[in-house]
Length: 435
Image 1 (cartoon, one colour):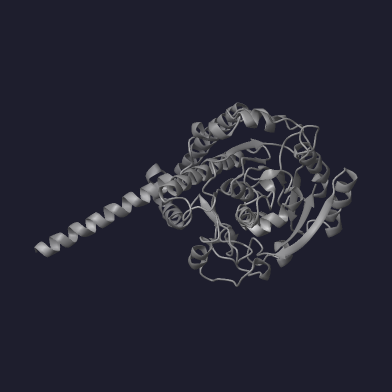
Image 2 (tube, helix red, strand yellow):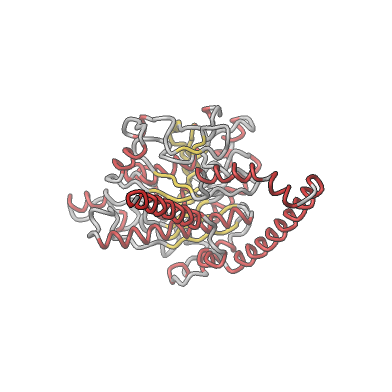
């Protein structure tokens, strides 16, 4: 009898712990309050999101009232309506146990896709944490076990970023497209990142490969070239390249997308959550002595901002967002001395937007002046989606040259397409490098 009581007590304790754990997980997955996002957005953007939240709350209340009235008409009472919706609620609860709002993507030295962000089911929410297409260009063999792969990569500077897919329509910001995964994976590989950013390296003492002999040469090669750089992403979607640059030591990261409230809100929350992860990692690095835990243990957390922005328009909203921080460095930014790296991943599939996109890049990219000879660059990774003729997409190259850019076409890489049964062509990532 005593043993039975003890077993019952143990089971009750386990169930209680499980319930508490599920509640904590749910709390962690819940959206952050808007007030907490103020540190990464401008005051104007905050007021805009506040108004959007109020409108959404009003719309949801109205929808709930209309639904309640319809159910009463159909079944005669609220009780019957509740009983009828019980099945759908149970289905939603089962779905919620497996689907989280906050997702993760992890870089890989061996798999072109990294881990996470690929949907292989008929449901758009059916994401997996493994690569479906191993690629020889990534220096290794494909691993079927993400845990083993991640453990291996932990010795080679892999990163894990958090992202949230916005439910708002408009553009293709509701998925992690191959181009975003590709450029983020290149960023996380020091050697490949150096090759990618080679046009803007060696412009100052911090970027020199050789300073004081072979020892400094080796130490410099172990540092990610994004350290100390200013990075901006246009048409960010879920912002995987932005959060990767932040984790890898960029001084300033600005993540932009079109002015869709839910999209910007999700990006702002991701900015905060990734920044918190970096701060935790930095603190742990100090506790464990730095070297074993973090290869970039001398890094401070960079500044991250999120801003709604439409291509081809003045960049004043971006400048205002940057200058709302207390950093003297950011207050000294001007239209000549801006970003070292501009990213626009999978943003050129609509030829009508080529010119406004290039105009924005020209306004944002760092340019030499009398006091500073350094220049910046832009990266345009993209796949051909089949919505128009391929040559129409490639026409951005002569247009960019006409607008004064030097354009390099880098080698393409095959990644996994976003969804099951999607044409492999939509997972083949081309890369344009503009200076």
